[in-house]
Length: 108
Image 1 (cartoon, rainbow, N blue to C red):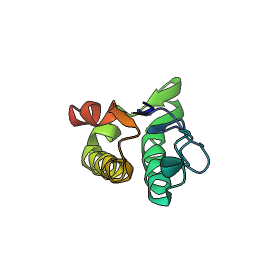
Image 2 (image 1 turned 45 degrees about the vertical axis):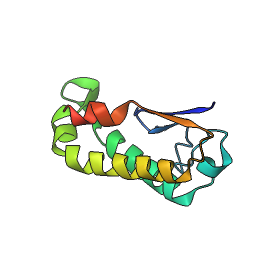
Image 3 (image 1 turned 135 degrees about the vertical axis):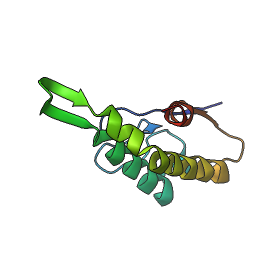
Image 4 (image 1 turned 180 degrees about the vertical axis):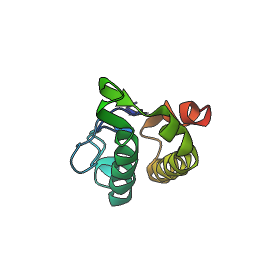
């Protein structure tokens, strides 16, 4: 059974893999890859998470702003919950979701 992995990285995700410019999922599952609401949520979450990376900041080439991530915890959890709810709505039993981010963000 195909598995959709949810995890975050700079300019990516949470649906792995996705188009970094549009947020369109590239899972190979057409109901997921062609859903506009998923694309929009995926892109919004990616933009929020990527905003925590600062370049040439704090004496480092790339610095991750952990305090801002903690400050945005509620917003990120809300977006991740909406994404998971939409995946559940679309799932006809033909794929699984492995969410690595909601528990991690919840523990911030």
